[in-house]
Amino acid sequence: MGIAFGFFIGISISSAHLTKISLLSGVKSSFDVPVAEIDRFSADVDRSHAVIDTSSGTKELEALGSIRIPKINVPSNPRGAEPLPPGIVVSESDLFLRRLWGEPSEDLKKKPKYLVTFTVGYDQRHNINACVKKFSDDFAILLFHYDGRTSEWDQFEWSKNAIHVSARKQTKWWYAKRFLHPDIVSAYEYIFIWDEDLGVEHFNGDKYINLVKKHGLEISQPGLEPNNGLTWEMTKRRGDRDVHMVTEEKPGWCSDPHLPPCAAFVEIMAPVFSREAWRCVWHMIQNDLVHGWGLDFALRRCVEQPAHEKIGVIDSQWIVHQVIPSLGNQGEAHNGKDPRDAVRTRCKSEWAQFQARLTNADKMYLEGLKRIGKQG
Image (cartoon, rainbow, N blue to C red):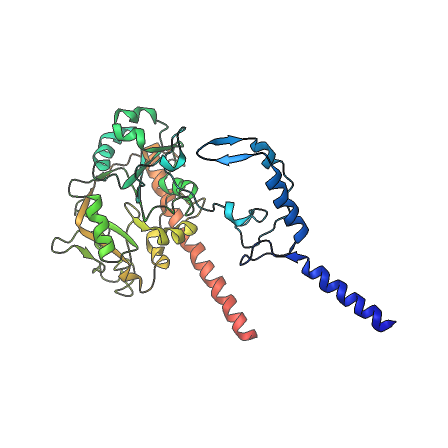
């Protein structure tokens, strides 16, 4: 009897196992779905009077929307999307403007390959107009407005096809952290994050991209014409070449000729990121450190090593820093300092805080590895 009972239990377990199959082969799932549930769902779909046909139209779609569906759980889906079938999950987006009518597949006559962003005030409209004209229709234009004035920009025809985001008295890194998530801008090969006070007489967007690709740069910037807006030797334009990746700085400034600011370095004024590099850089931007000071020294972490071969300055497509403290004038007097001085004081403070956080994060992580190594 015991033998017969055991045999019966074994057969029952085997049978139960064979009545379940994975919902989607090849997709990691934490449980199986009963075959009966799948068959019932398929039968309900087949019995539905709903018609889904892009050529003849649709009808009775609510019938499909009301069908009872098997429970789905796909742990390999993005966080929060586990209850969805993988075929419907769209984990990335874009900034392509679409129509309110017609077929979605016909919305875009041409998809922009690159994204150019400027953080602007209306007073600099003519300079931004000159900048935008240096970019072909392969570039999408996104304006971040720190003064709240957006509709006036429609005096420029290109503005009607640009994207406008407005929040008063905010910096480009505040905007970038909130509106340029890597999954939102993944459609673009390169992302320009530029200031508004740049002269572009000697710059062409298409030629710039060609040189970036030719030299395999993941992070770059145009060379700066030497004037009173120049801070670092690394970003100074060289007149005898297309690109440079190393320089000589003031004595004692560089502990290694291949480290910032002598190499693997661009400024935060007019950086250009590949989408791969931007995915890393975005995560390094701190929510509360809005001026971005100190990022330039840390960008080398976000490219393949050696970093000085992936970060460089494009000399033959150069710009001029006009040194217009327009955003600085948006500040307010603080602790006896005038608005511009108060803004600059915060910039310096943020640099110190960012470097402290980064150094502490490095130390914490590496000490943790050390402890794990000892335990092993």
